[in-house]
Image (cartoon, rainbow, N blue to C red; front, side):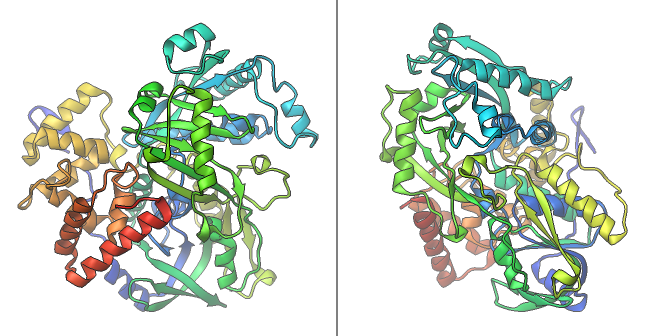
Amino acid sequence: MFHVSGCWLTWNPILETAYMNREETFSHLKENPEVSVLIVGGGINGLGVFRDLAMNGVDVLLVEREDFCSGASAASSHMAHGGIRYLENGEFRLVREAVRERNLMLQNAPHIVKPLPTTIPMFKYFSGLLNAPLKFFGLLDRPSERGSLVIKLGLMMYDAYTGRQRTVPRHKFYSRRKSLAKWDQLNPEVVNTAVYYDGAILQPERLGVELMLDAEAENPDAHALNYVSMVGGSEDTIILRDELTDETYDVRPKLVINAAGPWIDISNRKIGLSTRFIGGTKGSHIVVRHDELRKAIGENEFFFENKDGRIVLIFPLFDRVLIGTTDTPVEHPDDVRCTDEEIEYFLDMVKRVFPSLSLSRENIVFQFSGVRPLPHSSARTAGQISRDHSIEVLSGDWTNLAFPVYSLVGGKWTSFRAFAEQVTDKALARLGLSRQKDTRNLPIGGGRGYPRDEEDARRQIESLSAWTGVARERLKYLFERYGTRAESIATFMNGGTDYILRTLPDYSRREISFLIQHEKIHHLDDFILRRSMLGMLGHLTPGMLEELADVFSNVLGWDAERKAVEVTRTLSILADRHGVRL
């Protein structure tokens, strides 16, 4: 710790850690192909297990065919939620786990996960009383609309799961009159509203990256590589390919953990295993720029049942509004895109709650779609498929492999830590090791030493400004984005000539340089879509893209041809996957 101007700063080890770079890691693999655990998939499930194994001293290698959190984990609703709707399916263990894990995320990653007041508008009093028993006996495919009485009982039960740990307040119920006074744009046909609390994961992909950085900082034998795919394997060997150079490498693991999400069965086939573990469903979202809608919801998420029985949301995402989500079975996860029909569904959906607001396609600044890695199921509707997680084990006579394969089915952002803990305990037992460290109360990245309140934040920023020479206004931006990792970034920024970007005045050249050098960024879109919110919030412009490409060229040594390729690649991804055309 450093003492500056009467305050103590918490030292963050990220900048000072001597980790292996990509080339060093590949050289190490050539000389030492043996590894205790190979994790295939760098989404939130894989990264959670990677951190837990690393914290427990295991030599572990994680590979991800694209960037970290670029697949299913990039298509979340940005919620850390206790799964109130799972009560109706009778999945009480899952609700209990999710509520606990939501509270731990608020505690361990307070720079990214914030308390989220969630409003449920209700349009009937007694509807839905028989939903749960009828679903239990298989007599209900799509539930009737849930009325006030059912929701009140559900919220009372939901509060009970939090127990004595009042991380978030208990729910409140409002009459029609009070509801319309509180939200003046609300549909006047509402009979009640209720407000309960969950969590908002403001930058999920950054949370995943910080898990990875924590793991490598803790354990010199833990290595994570993006843009590396598993292309084959047999007996005791797995073949990996560097997607940036096309070079291949052999590794010999004692255990393989398949965390490829919707691609689990596809990945298993690459090593000769025929499985059908995944029956994923597609979820799409849009992000809109609409000042009236943003003002109408305030800081509350609106979480409600649409006319077709689908649970949907209107979510405050910085200065934008996130609207979602759909739930449709799909076969090919690489092909999912947000469709015109889904966009029309979202636009119509908003009218159910805010009928006086006019929302059109012109308001959309970003769209995305992903596949939930749910278990293969014979359920008659997507909503009836369990959201629980499981570990499917293939070993011995069932395979031609010398090592077992653990396939991680299900899982979600809220419960990633609990799932990782279960997988790690199973892996440690397989390896004959015992647990050394628990992650339950372990801070994540910039959540370590995070300010307790606004006054504490002010003192930390003032002390850090005096220590690093970076202006307080700049440090406020850094704290908002990175929590206490702002210290390492500010120290780096002060170590050379820096300047504010012309097209992006709340970023500086050395801030972005730090991210490129320390967060395994290889493509322009890695920063735009996953290390920042520039793409999702619709802030990107052609001039900004060019200026960012210049910064990348200077840091990574790109020539004019490579720079042009990267700009073209980014524009193509934005247009194809996200409906953004600059």
